[in-house]
Image (cartoon, rainbow, N blue to C red; front, top):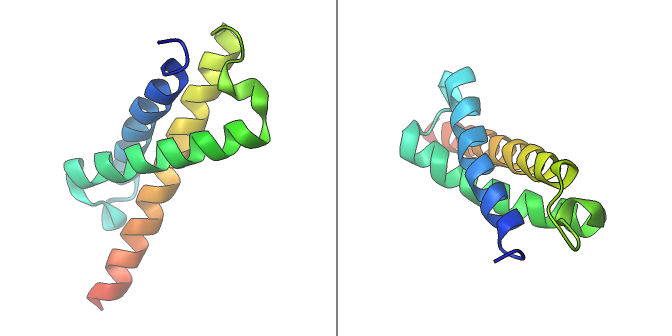
Length: 95
C-alpha cells in the first residue's frame, strides 16, 4: 500500500487542482467532471514525471510530511496545467 500512496495523493490533488483551475479560469473550464478527469490525468502524469526527476518526491522508504506535501503540490499543479491545456485546445477547436 505504501507504494500506491504517493500516486493516490497525486491523483486526488490533480482532481482538486483541475477544479480549482476551472473555477479560476471559467472560459477554459470543462465542467466539474471534465475538470476532475483532466486533473486526475494531469496529477498522475505530472507526479510521475517530477518523481522521476526529483526522487525525493516519490516518498522513498516512508511517507514523511515533506513527501506528502511534495506529492500534493505536484499533483495539484499537474492537474491544473493539463486542465488549462485541454481547455485551450477545446476553445481553439470550437472557433
